[in-house]
Image 1 (spheres, rainbow over the protein chains, first blue to last red):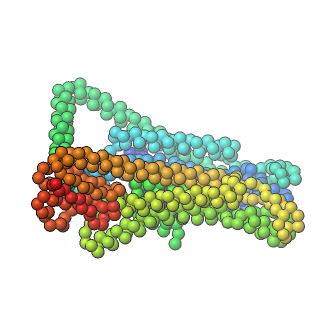
Image 2: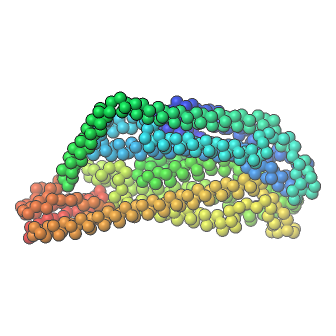
Length: 261
Length: 287
């Protein structure tokens, strides 16, 4: 189980995303996951080994390291990436449920004119409308919340995004105020700023996608209202025809009930 | 052999799970397996090297580490993941066994993929109960072994060969505590999902049984009007089919290949308790 598996899970959602959503997935996997795996993990690899305190007192280094780094940067980024990618699974689940229902209706004989066969249902790209629109919008909203929360946690835990080269530590069992030196502080600062910037870009993409979806819905509604105003009889006829069709299909089903299939 | 093997095995279970079962699988894959592999494993990587006791006596650190951590938390976590995933394989085995029977009898014993009835229902239920048992068992074990779910920064040790009570310092205690709490929360979430799925399955079955009985009473009262005796048998999870009652004789057969029934008697074949094997007969006869 690794990042590749997450990519497989999330990649499946790609088909049903908007263009901005596709850009977001690309940014996540290339500028964040890949950078984390190939670069950041190497930089932080020896973080505790090379964390040195100016004392021979056993235990002082451990305690000081634990105080200044309650959670390592790379672990926090890994958790952030997992939490930020997970809302996309809501969309995947909703699409899977929609397809399951469509397949069930197809087997019953309801949607034969819409789909040729079951394979057609699986291949069809589901449009972001109706309840899927709500699921998709909620997933984007949760993504934004998670991104912002993790950025705040980072800021709160490390007093900013800059790593100093020396820290003063006076916690028991350290005998006095000792100097503790972090390994590679500049390189770590560079990567921290890079990851934070990528986070901000992802957040902006999410906000843009949210606005795009909201505007799309508003335009669609105003267009529908306009059509109804221009052709009120046509709209009324259509709705009556739909009602008739439903009645016919219902009565047809009742006639079939009780006969073995 | 690695975690990918477990992942591939579990992916096969997805086909035969309920909706809640699929959510459970997603939680296990993403919030437990993935977090374990990309984050938690690295936190415990240097746990013994960085375990330091305030003493130069050789062997004291080793003995104290072994006393406080008889089994590493991260290894217990891995064991828990494996044991909790295993019961789902019972379902896969059951279906594989079914498939081989289908091939031998050369007929479809199963209604369709993903439909759970008869024996598969019981297998699925047992796997849920065993899964939940393992989850709770491991949580209790964790709690008992480490005196709670938090990792202290300092432990006092006075085992031989340590000459007196020495202070021993654990590396990264806060980070370890955070990940252990993460593990406990996801475990509890999985337990809740299992309970919901269990209740859902049992309730669904009870409702089906009630509807069966209700339709049976209705049927018998209608058939008695027409002086017809009606006996029906349908197992748990086996939906009976409604039939048209006719004064002379009635109803059509469901599953072939029985010969046409004799006059005054018809055979109705419905799914048995086994679900895919054989059919039980129900007779409608004129009194």
